[in-house]
Length: 421
Image (tube, rainbow, N blue to C red; front, side):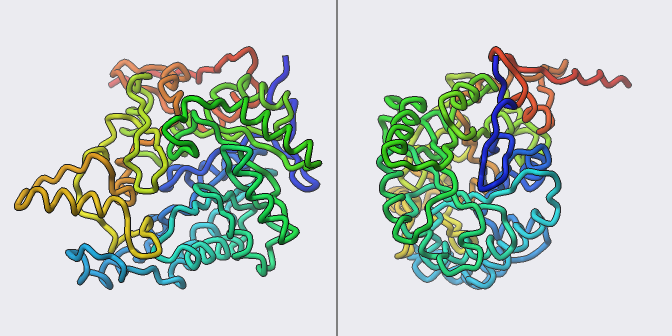
């Protein structure tokens, strides 16, 4: 019976434990979680989602406060086209977050940053170029390009000194999406160093339509493997979405995957950035508590707990402070939905918006409880305390359980000693 530790992920001329921990934003995949993963020989992700807010929390900067003050005059205006990010400050925030993480790195693993194309920020090309370039400047080991096709992303950094040095990867959910990306990348003579193939059981935004349940990660992986063999491509494929045990991981590694990306089980670790009370909500969740809906302004289906406070919230759009989802014309689907409800309910103090949510504000406040499809199984990986809460785990415990377990077994942690008065 093979274990994950019997395999290695080869990137360039080095090998790693074939476990990636996904980049959950906003600072849910913290630097501490990514660094612990790297220390153990795997690959950890941080996220650059809402990086200015992350910087303010970690380094006592005032990026959000200054942006809010600058655009305070526009708060009551339905038109957000004027709200722009200062690119120099965006670069500074990225360098602070990435640079501090890289300075603290120990061990033989790597730290990557997850960079979402759908963070359009009212200047899609300019802000994306800034985020990518600043992460490279700050010494990040690699960049995973997610939430979009990223057809122009390589071109944005083709002249950067580290364009061919850093590891660059893409997340896809179909062979078609990969084919389109490879054609674009080939024009720069720069193929991705790895490809994360995310199936329909993943958490957060899904790369599928409303028919997501008709797809299967094994089938998608098989299709991409076959196409890559036909094209004589040897890019490592990383399977992601619904991989809950080490044996789940081995089932992909034995079929030729270079590694697996996991995240759900790390949401209940000490190193995860979720508040402790939210971690307990995740662990207590049942299978019926997990839904896929269309409340994200990005247009992607999104998996979350149905008790998430963001659903139905009618808070005023926080674009002057955040505005990460404003498109190139300053529009966001939530703004449209919010304005519709304000006009339909004149004078009402309690606006309810069911079809979309203010993703920026709610993610910033940890009120958008996105999750993987198997979150309901978390309670089986730990101990229940006498008070009804669940014991939180270390990232090392979860990582090593993936690395060394067999027979779909899950190693429970050492039970905490009862606290006596």
